[in-house]
Structures are given as structure tokens and as C-alpha cells.
Image (cartoon, rainbow, N blue to C red; front, top):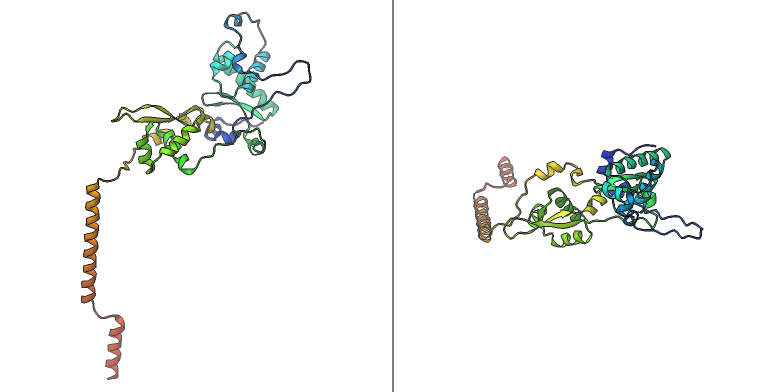
Length: 284
């Protein structure tokens, strides 16, 4: 079974990795006791009973980690995974996740555990993405218009960034697009700037990392280079300057018209006339 490279995983959006994650439902078991879906937060026993648990095998711990990841709807950090699976610490959780992925790779399962948005999440493999889109249980992809995608890219690379800088880079007003991105939980207000007026600063959210399959914001391609580029000022010229420029354009147009008239008066006869004169002289 081919392992997915880490570099390839971090540069491919989540919709290509698995078109977001597929939530696996517990199979129906025909027993007297019903099987219910519960929150991972309810799986961790009380703190006073954790120390009283008997020693268990690694197989049992891996199975419990798998169950927690199966039920989790959001990426879980190593600390939370250890808490929900009743493990010693986050290091133990990471070790068990690696062992679980090795088992998935050896058996050729359709899913594996990936690090997304600062946590672990159970995702289907990329090669099943096109087929899984046909199922109604797969979450719909995040579709963005080109202007919204451009605005999101500016925020992702320049965050935290005020609205004035976003509009200066794009050259258009971005108020409505910012509102739409915030409604989709891709952008949030991360504070206020120290500049005059203390404008809001915009930054990306954890959901942004999930959608684009990024562990951290530093995994963006060429992030350091893009952040170092200066912001070009797109402010319009003052009214006086614009008026003066318009007057200069009008005066230059008038001077061009006068030059054209003088040029027509002083220009020699057309080529056709000179040819006709030469032809007449030959006859005489």
C-alpha cells in the first residue's frame, strides 16, 4: 500500500484529500442493547478513576484511539485525543496514531489519520474522492467565486490584515465578500490595528485549515515570500490633482488639434498629384 507523502498532503486541499472527511456510522447490530452515537467528550472517565484503570495492552489502546477518531467531527489535538481515549499524555497518543496508520497502510483500508488544522482527523484517501462525491453523506465542497478566493488568499498570506490593505491589494471594495467569508467561518476578526481609527484585523479560522488540508498557516506555499511583499497603495488621487490632470489632458488635446491643422496646410501634395504632373510633362 502506498503511503501518502506528508509534503503532498499539506499542499492539497481537503476536498482533494477526501472531499472533507466521511463520517462513519456505527453498523446496526441486532441485539437487545441499542448502539448509540455519543460525543467523544463523554468517553473520558472521571479524573479520579483514570489512575485506577488496570494495565492494558497496546491493542486495546489503539482500538480506543480509533473509536474516538471515528466519532470526532473536528480534528483533535494530541492532548484532547489522550484525554478522550484515557491515555497518559499526548506523546502516547501520537505513538498510537502512527501505529494505527501503519495498520491501515498494511491492510489497504480506504482511510487513514491525517494531521489537519493542528489536530488528528480520520479521513478517506484521495483516490476515493471522486467516487465518494456521489454519496449523499459526503459534506458539500466549499465553492468560492474568483473574487472571494482572491480576497481569502490575501487574508491568508497577509494576516492579520486590515480591510484597507485588502482593498489596496485587490483594487476594489471587499466589504460584502468579507461578510460572506465570515459567514462561512473561513475568516474572522482577530483584533484591532494600532493605526489611526483602530480598524479591525482579519485572519483565517481553523475551518480554513481544515478545508485546505493545512496543518498550520505556515504550510501555505511560499508563505514567507508572499508575506514580505509590500502593499501597493491603491488610494485615488486628490480631487485637485485629478482636476488638474483633466485640464492638462484637454489642453493637450487642443494643441494636438492645432498641430494637425498646421501640418495639413504645410504638407506637400499627395503622391497621386505629383505622379499626374510628371505624366503630363512627359506628354508635352
